[in-house]
Length: 169
Image (cartoon, rainbow, N blue to C red; front, side, top):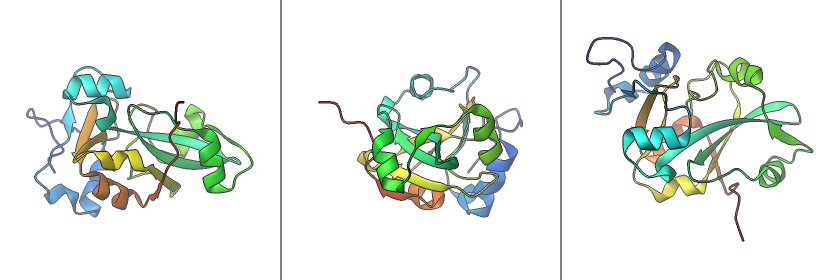
């Protein structure tokens, strides 16, 4: 996996680049892509890449009874907190504050990758990610993304496959 831009600058966050090496993903013929404009939101990322919104993998940190948990969700869907709560057997699930996200992952909101975090957290991946051959996720920086097959992304993240997306009636 290429983790430098054409000008030789680092495309992925150094911690994430190291995680790619440790997982053996740096040897794949895939590259981290860096954009001049931020890809902080799923919509910004999809527009920059030129893919469907649902092909973006959002890495979202929640607090389940105060303990950080990572939820991987397709970019077109919202997380149903009640489903996450039930899945984890937690009393309370809330969106984690920015300082908790950085402390748990080592990354800022908008650049959190699905793996390569500072601490080990429980990971849930929504089944909706499996509807695509390739999904794009943040590479540790709000300007960088990388493609991976969903099943590989889920495996490398150590995620449990669940159905936690909000269903509209």
